[in-house]
Length: 70
Image (cartoon, one colour):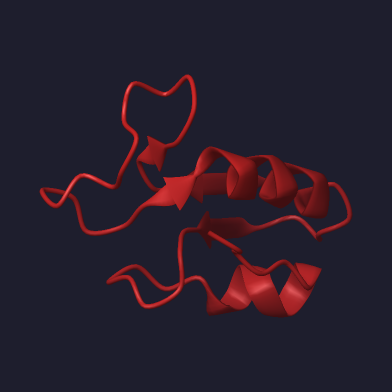
């Protein structure tokens, strides 16, 4: 299984806010939750990013029930 994250932001990442130069972002707390959700997901390729980004995350959300909070 492969889970692709957008650029991370939040504590200890070196970026307090999303970088406007990139198309998709993910808060570090949401990345941790995505990793936990991925443990029960079937094999596949998934994107874990915030909602309303240019990268599609609907498949990962549908399969795992994960939803980004931040």
